[in-house]
Image (cartoon, rainbow, N blue to C red; front, side, top):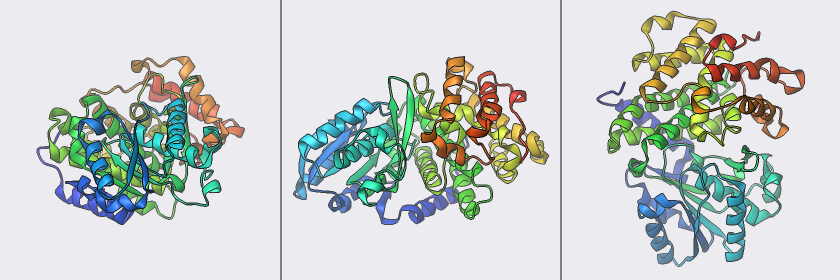
Length: 429
């Protein structure tokens, strides 16, 4: 239920958090694209531009090309970026093109898939091998000595925050399975996001990107229980979720609402800050097996209410805080704030689903055409050692070797298929 005005103090707080996070490495907000000149010398002089259609349509490619040439850089090629979900075939194509051109710098202009593809392609172009060599944590740094890849990222969509993070998602289209490169060495050397460019995003892309941002914040926050930086994660995640919940209905009602677009940019960027403070868990893990039927953000969002119930007893503090967001925005009754334990988690999950319904978003896997095969695939992916980090990020102990995936995750996914919270176990801590 969209508000007539957004909380300005919350937006100022978000700005301060982002400056604290990235410092001079990041230009965001009003007229941020004018900052490109000050970042040019962070990459080599033989440069390629990797972009999607948005970068060309909005004139960002021309702006970047002119700036590079004015500073004496060679623009050796303008390359078509990776498609949605970053198929590994696109990564190999881009890596080959970068090697053939002899590039020592890249400017990536686009959404998360374009930037993820540029990261992975640069890794292959610089260090060789096959993409499977880098799935997991820290395997790029093992070859680079920790040096960051020569990449400037210009974001055009409020979504994954790939322009700010150490993650690159790559999909095997033959198996429709997504895997992750996780490494500080693939954090761009500089990033830019001028939030008003997102007014060209379609309603569906706006929804999916915004809810991906909520997923980043909420999953990291859930997994932060007991951590030394819990208070910082709580501050970042709460601010991000509140901004997105308040702004998204407004942006969907009026694509030209620049205040709402600004708030969504801040909120999804705080999702990026969240996943650099901690890691995502169950919903992101499941989303990697749904690429044949769902965009990434949509898959994560659908799974979040059900994992919220599974983790209920380990996340009581988080639940009390996030419940307030859904109450204040009209998606949950005030009386629910008095609940505790699993009942509080179910109430928060109800608030999430009410929010989904308000924006015309699905709330179960059945609604989007998932099958038993998808559930089986998600269960098997949870047992994959290359995705073990997602289990380790969960707020309750999940050990594949102890049978926890079949005992806890499988029935949670079955609940996400049917919408029946009663199927979700209540594990003892």
